[in-house]
Length: 129
Image (cartoon, rainbow, N blue to C red):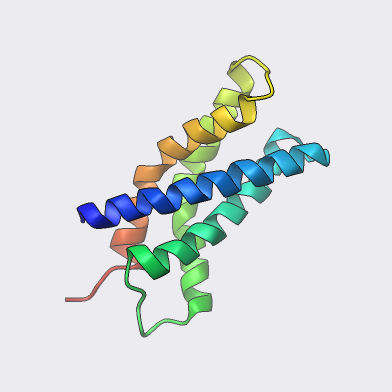
């Protein structure tokens, strides 16, 4: 489990980079803090799913990739709600600076990580014994 948690954290770090990068692009084209974050979150989930299914967990041989993706996305929404609520609180309360989006994404990501790890480990990539 320790190895999985470390790999999950590495995938999360890559997801964080994608999340923040897409958010800044979305902000540059006028999407705003909240709509931009929805697009960046989905992008980050897509990337972390690929990393986690390949390097962190063992995917089920009895489930299609398409079904696994939708289940993963659904599972990540639990942590995503924690993540987004924390992100939103940071956006609304912290001083408005150029670094605010990345700080808010980081705070939200840390808040949602535990929920997401447990969802992935105990549901999406659960190994039958």
